[in-house]
Image: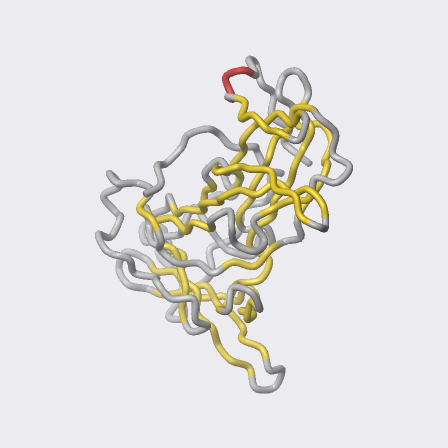
Length: 254
């Protein structure tokens, strides 16, 4: 199981609040708001350097979890006209009002052999200054697709957490993340790596950011990134505790 971590996260650019969508049967009362998810990312774990014929790569495990008041719930809707599976996010109020809005598409992943939401996560390796500031972006993934399911309990003491998994299939009909549950992508999976070609020895921050396309509505987006520090040297790697960077000053934009 995966433990929740308070290591904390790189502040993301401050964006304007997203208006609450109107439920189909009228605006939700002020005292009956939508119970939105709040996506968070644990610091990447299981880091290791691997060499292949295509070069050196940093591999890692990633966990995205939901600390909100309601689930992240996604439904696929096949569109015969375009041949795509359009995705809507659905949210509820405490009294059962429902709202939904489009958030992208499900695409079939050719190596994972199931359906993913496009553009969900991005991985970045930054050089860091003496105080831990993010300095220069050294390498980055594309915005990667993700299958979103309940795979591990993260918040064992969260009273809103269901006891059993509620989202457990990577089909294109329904995916999601329950409150208190996380979705773990192990380091051996395709996409769980960054190339290290041209990256010299030094100190770095590996940053993983969920909801990379900013299309999913959630309680807040300033806590979507998880970070771990590392030192690269002689084709080896050490994890550096965040406490080693006293007085760290996080960048608010990058």
